[in-house]
Length: 116
Image (tube, rainbow, N blue to C red):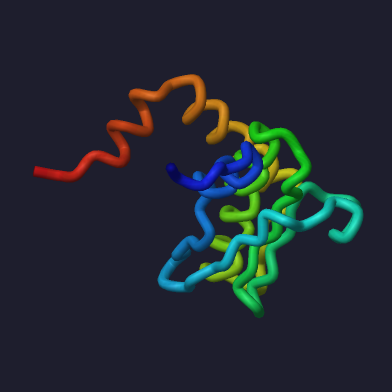
């Protein structure tokens, strides 16, 4: 008989633990607390330590959108560290992409398909 896995452990096992963003490996900390992050944000990106923190107590929907939001921050930092988009621009992009990906599963299937 296998080990009993809690819902929280199972939920965490489905989440990526690392991402590669423009050749840089980022570690994802799903155990971050919103209270410990700057300004009570849902997430935070540190491009010096290549760490993305996400509030693991937030709803899964919020965690997913936050991860996408933080990936956009990390990508923009790699591309241009001196001319960063505003928080409002990142938020608009993240929410728009998140909704498109969630509401149109065929979109992501098409985008992630291997070329012939």
